[in-house]
Length: 312
Image (cartoon, rainbow, N blue to C red):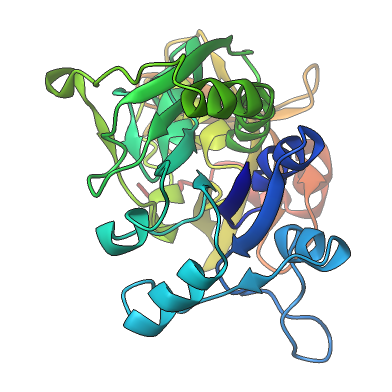
């Protein structure tokens, strides 16, 4: 089929490559403008843009999808169907109506669960053990269209937001061609979602990463894993941001003030901090403006950190 592809981050290239390798003709790519710059101050080329350049595919980076000019530019690319993978913006109905076969979307959750902007992070925050990838027909509502295919994935205890997202889009790359082809030939019937069972996630902010030491250690550790690579998990000490990179809950009651740095454990080489009614081990940290280091290195460099009380 002639496919228009919408996608922005690096993980979306798994879906893009699968379509191309499956014999589909990518006639146009729509992506968001890159926000990262190189040493010359120019935007870096994303992996999606690089794929377009290498394969001589027209690539559009519209600031908005709502203008008549943008709609016409996308329509001029042609295509029989559109495929969306983490584009990052809601696609308006005026665009969705362009293609004869509509628009299918790859979403990293088991819809109708965890619709919205941060499904992977929410899955980890809730301590769930099973997730999956859903491919559905897009409409003007957020992640609410009928389901075409869905596969489950058993999570690992140490999965981060980054590693789980990668796994779910790799799973989606295995699903996309069979799904698109079965839908196009009429052998796959879309199944409406049960909207009453829907749950929703929100767009994350940088401030979401700040630790509340009154939370229990298990919740803090899930936050540390969920917010890799962004927004990260952090606290403040001596007026500077202190990122927490590695953590582990300790099943040991504590009567210390939440946030108090209790001890450096020579056996585990970790810093022990009171959290909720228990304790938390910190294995890796990063002081603002510095490189990530182990807890042992941090303690040698900042011995006054012991007995500090971190803000909640």
